[in-house]
Amino acid sequence: MKIVVRLVIAALVLIALAGGGIYIASQQKPSVARGLAPVPTSSMAAQSFDRKVQQLDDAAAQAKKTGTAQIIQVSFTEQELTTKAAEAAASQSGVQARIRRSISREIRSSPRRQSR
Image (cartoon, rainbow, N blue to C red; front, side, top):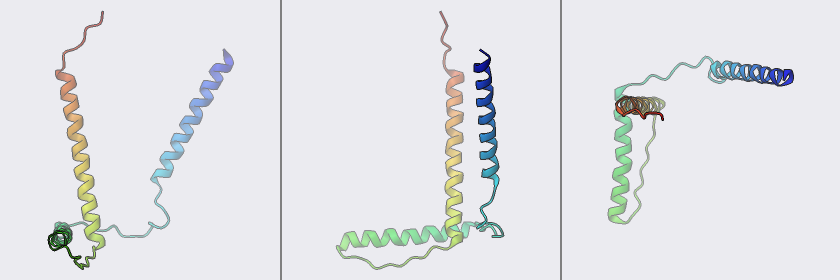
């Protein structure tokens, strides 16, 4: 019995140490990222990104319509990509929050099962 208790305690200590190590490691900035300025985001960058994507869509539609390849060159800036990534992340977290609220409402409104 003592051995089982010691093994359980040792396992819990190892789990706690591993979790702490993972947390500390996740808080560290990679050496490559140290000293880099954050990329600003803006609505103008998002609009520019959308216009460029629309150009790609238009060229694809034209190629499909005519049957000939369309040559197009589009370059995205770091600010455009960062802005769209931030928008996507915010949108995703909003979706997750709505799902959680919906599930919570369903749980609260569902009839409770009675135990026998």
